Length: 314
Image 1 (cartoon, helix red, strand yellow):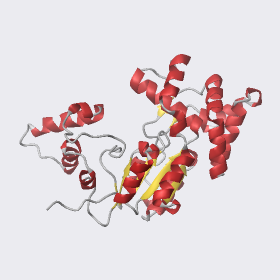
Image 2 (cartoon, rainbow, N blue to C red):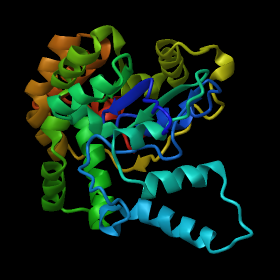
Image 3 (cartoon, one colour):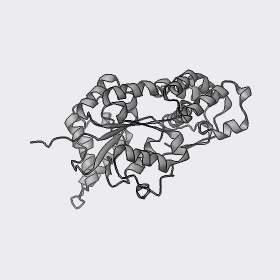
Image 4 (cartoon, rainbow, N blue to C red):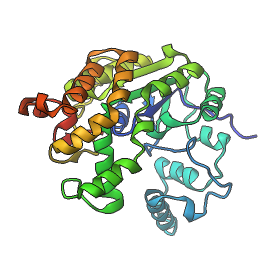
């Protein structure tokens, strides 16, 4: 008889480029929390064939893990550790709900979770299915100024898919990247909040802000600990909490692109602020309004807002 699958106690659903890698790295230090060896499992957002050994279904990273494991298997003197056994299950077993549940340890003393930023934009039928599997799961959603999120996502797209740094890219390349990354749907935060709240309850949805991460990452992490009902004392905050994870570095957003993004996202940001109404969303709205009217901008405006600063913490 197969063991009963265990589904996550929490999911971090995004947003993309809003600090999810930082969260994954720091939550893994907590002794009461378990996260998979791979940050993003991409189970619910991917159409998987029953035969998962077909290499065409693996992305570049997963293929590298598969080659690594196969090379180890050729050496009979080399024992596979628990992480490698987990990777074998992840890479080679048929994907279904039972398989997904088998990826999480059964230890009731551990709070187990998964972080896949693309889950925020899942269709309602998929979110409903997730709720049927784990109705008491808690949901973490980190938000970032849509202007900054779009620029950071475009920088990643140019680097990974075009081998071009955003500081050296042409305006046409940047505009193509901005259009490719679906900036409006990715930052439709209120729609995503409403959908996930409908199925899990607003009280089970944690909203955090990239601005908090930039200003006081330890405080944000402890808020997440409290939400997950694990020990949240400063003793459990890693010494590396201020380290940027998968950070990108680029120059200040040129004014022409800043204005373009501000015009693109202005009404969206206005709606977000109307719905959430806090100091973070107000700062986003103030920047967007100033940016669509360049005569109102000063050098201090450009330097002081994280949306146009020269580094990104993911």
